[in-house]
Length: 275
Ligand code: C2E
Ligand code: MG
Ligand code: MG
Image 1 (cartoon, rainbow, N blue to C red):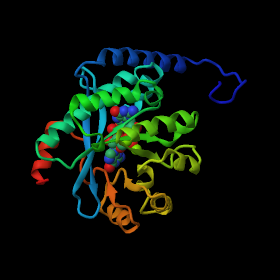
Image 2 (image 1 turned 180 degrees about the horizontal axis):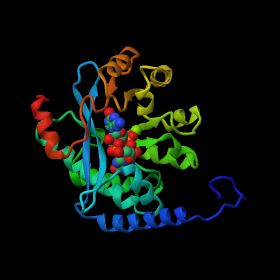
Image 3 (image 1 turned 120 degrees about the horizontal axis):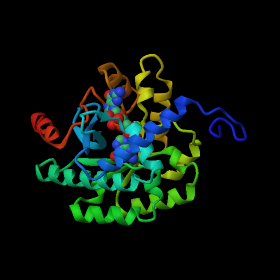
């Protein structure tokens, strides 16, 4: 009822009870999965739209349940956030992604960078930056090779705290990207306050680009005006690639180039394309 409008009432239905029980069960199995091989990271390449040269990777968390069912991150990450599990999951992804990047560098792919998604509760945690510094030190990865992806809505409730965190992150040498740009409810001025180096065009705007390219075009121009690099998410067709390139967007990520892959498959993929 609160979610609809404060001070209203609504009836508790059997479906709501079932949904709540299903969430509890999922959370229980997520707790068991934490720290087991059920959770792992996959990596999706980010490419230069013009040459299709690989510039870097984005780490994405995966959960495969013992029965083989894949639970999408859009389902279990919000649950982990609510249950206070995100710090543990986040540290796992950060550590895994840095260790993978180190191995990729050692395999000769020295120019690759790694983007890691960071959720709201992680960024608010007082230990977040010291832990990050520790992980970089432990895995021997240069901070300049790591980018953190945050969403604009993170700044909505506590801009001062988030600004401070981002400043500490930049002081360590990492860069920051704004993910899913244009889908949140923040004001444009938030973008200036966050001082991120990269803007990611949400894939919903890329998906509609052939029918309506106005928002994608606006995001590219906004990024350029603010001196940011712009990358398009969810590029699935050559037509989308061509349109993005024509509007001045120079980087892309999507199934057209590569799906997210486990480390082994990624190494094979990288060596097959010779770079
Ligand atoms: P995101 O960070 O915006 O990641 C991009 C999503 O788009 C990924 O979904 C990716 O698999 C998907 N994608 C990439 N290319 C294409 C394409 O061409 N077409 C389509 N239709 N989709 C494409 P995924 O892996 O399901 O992740 C969903 C979201 O879950 C992520 O969105 C991110 O917000 C969150 N997430 C994933 N891993 C992590 C993590 O380690 N930590 C945190 N905090 N969030 C994560
Ligand atoms: Mg992302
Ligand atoms: Mg995104």
